[in-house]
Length: 221
Length: 299
Image (cartoon, rainbow over all chains, first blue to last red):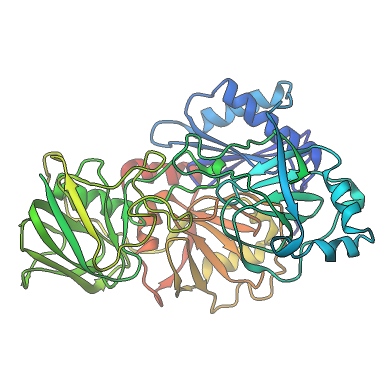
């Protein structure tokens, strides 16, 4: 038996445990599935469905939490299926410019990945920063964001070895994406630089600034 | 009520918890809250705690001294040994402690987690609306960390009227789950083995997750796919790349890319998290409507 293939145009509404529903727009990461997941989450935020307590957009899915003591899953699922029939609009988010110190002690993998891509580090940085990226997802760790997608010539797999800890502010690169760690985390991604942009402040409301669908342009700090 | 308590000894994983910090998954923060939510609630009724935060402790318990003031305290969860000034007390139970009183909670016969709650608030700042400690994110409770010997906690406010609790109906039998997000990744024979084989709780357990020992080698030969990351929830039964099953706890990671064969139902989470290392556990599938009916019935 294999994995069910889910097409972005035919999302799957699945129960996850007894208090959440997951609306899946894909079984693998692609641009269309991601845009639809983000758009659907934004539409639900704009026009809430009664009984849904939390909306969590992810890479290709949206988690919906409800209270089974006060809501029937059939009612929520029915409303979700109706909403999915409607036109999904793209979320237009904020625009950010994020300065990065590439390479050096806080970007130890920069030279190696430029080598793997057979370009100079300057050329890599220029191409990395050339186009604005979208925030594809949040939620892996506090304030952590995935940004994508780079063009296919910049796609590299993750490292073989996981680093036990990289510091907050680390700028990570793999799988056609750039990610920013907002807290100290373990990671198997290439560490290409560091930013002073902090996306997690526990005492602020909201505690993180970047949201899915926002536009991010990286630049040399 | 105004009192100060001093932690004189803390076992591992002694944390301040309230019902949980809900609503921040999109920011990368899972809810935390008590591993045994029912026991937390019952300890709170005994103490007249209302919605206030309390202390969760693990198998080795804690000792404390009331440095000044007085406080009504209630305790429940598993079965621990508890004494006040050397006098053994009932478990669960409650008592009013005054300045100079010492309470000692030590290992007992049942469970991993117990709760001590107070007829008032623990004076720590709310972070994102909650006092719950997230050891993963290092926020909430006291400086986002586990309590340790020497910590001083202020107790303030009046609490609510304490109430008796009825004896808990400790359900036995298999842990019930609903089939998971990726059940189809596992073939029918393997799914059948999953619900007919015994697993054991391993010693690798904390508030983030509980690893199981798969002695029947149900997943040993399974080819485990790596999947696109999706949000995860407490109780999810993930199968890691090496075939190890792990059940996600209250401080779980917010997203994950391992296949999930099932999710333990809310009504059985407390009971599962109280299973001690080496305990045998079997899993039984139930339908969603049944799972929710059990939750409504409070069993």
